[in-house]
Length: 126
Image (cartoon, rainbow, N blue to C red):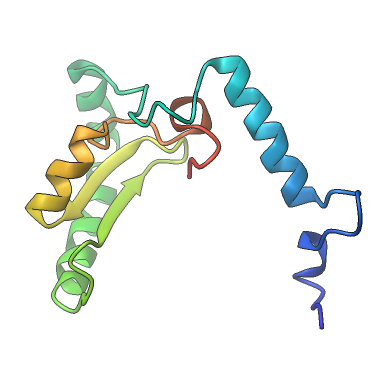
């Protein structure tokens, strides 16, 4: 039984629902922007000066997120968990995880100032 909330996500024959259509449109945009499935690394990372400006703008939010993370971190059962705080444009403001996870993420470009937008990361972007 479909609820009213889930109904828009259901396919009916050849007619695509709004979610499927948005995903297809995203794939087309990524192809035209050169974001490819075989290139995993994030493409858009701020330089040092722009990153400092971004962090300065969101200092209070970052401090509050750190407090929340410290409270939650001790109760995590998944050793691979990572918290990522972004601004409204999906620009990474803070990352919290275990050192091994942070290092693995950094190798893929997941770092302060990186963009998790579609143009930087592809259709699977946040």
